[in-house]
Length: 427
Image 1: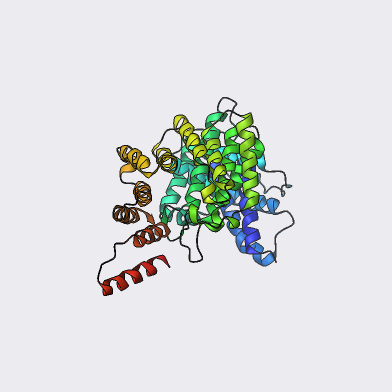
Image 2: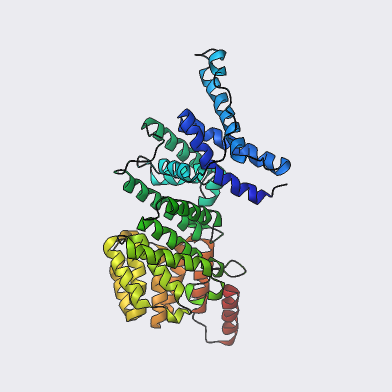
């Protein structure tokens, strides 16, 4: 009997390949995607009990084709006779074929420029990532009905726009690949640091993003930004084993046990970054990967080459200016030139409305104030950051930092009470 985990992984790998076969055969993305979802559900129910078939892709293709035909018959029964529908007999099981190009074609279709970014993410995770609507809703902590609506609207827009199931032309390709990279970047980031909820990580999202980025790199090995994004994901995800304590609490970079980092992922990420920077035009994903590589290659936090990181952030800020790049650059400035220099830059950055109420700005201010020795102000800033984030692990971490700096009353009873409070917050 096949294990549920292996079956789940296989279904997610085959989902876009089967969808590509149906779309090429029948041409209707909307109905084909629904039929594939029904086939995946049937497999998830039957294969654990009956075993994985010898030709799993052929099994899924056959079942999905039958579901498509059933839908077609229902929708055309009033206009066509049964003998016309009977001509569309279920096809023979398809032989397994390499699915990288098919998967990529589906991925590019899901990231069609006519769709909103939220719709691109949802459709990509369902059609290419193999997640159900409910799984996507849980991952992003939104109602299932909201995700279903996004997917439905996305498919309707693709149909209305007459988008064809084909690789984009050479002229279209850079824009389409750029959209795919941004979608995968968003999926990875949400998985690595969940924006809300009880867990810091959502490994299913980071795993899907890495898998799809790897397939994209296999198809376009000379594209420096594709390689840069894959490297960035690998170098960042390599730290995940040390990023939380046994109880799920966040462990900051400076305090992580670097012996728990994934050295194989780091080596692969560094090699990808080195090659991309040497052979391709420099882009933002490559620069972010280079920054991650500098962090990962330092044996201790104290050995981090902050001068190099600051230089990379300066270049990144010129290529793709933005509030989060500014915030990270400010941290690098503080590490090179001292916390007061960082605080001066931070005061100027706060004028950006995107940053003004963001919990990360308050968290950076708290960290820099703590480095500068202003414990009272740092304490208040940590608490403010904790109130602004929706992530429960981040809330606990920020409150624990604040508790370490909490002013202690001078009388004995108060001192004992304060010590107990700190202990309970940081345990």
